[in-house]
Image (cartoon, rainbow, N blue to C red; front, top):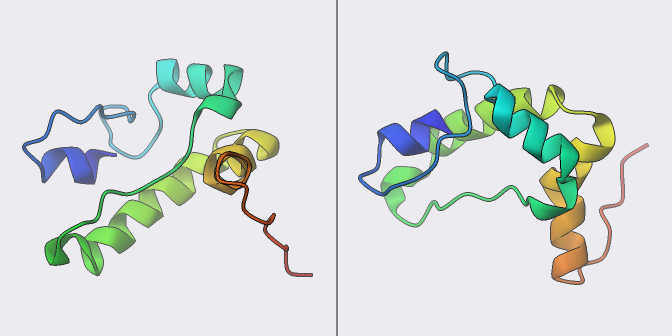
Length: 94
């Protein structure tokens, strides 16, 4: 996401368009075509990555996930991680 890319000297790949608020069209197309290949994660190792920086990244990704079909968003947000690490499925609140 643009927050992580702009605040780091690491060679991250920014998956967002120039506005910084929407997934780039090519990335969106790839994620929708291959949802089983993506897992949402954050590399928030140091204290400066927590708090507002982390919350900002969460806000960006929540909006990005809303752009995707529901099944794709669930796969990227948690279902793929559950599958890969054999975690119990998320129990959705009713």
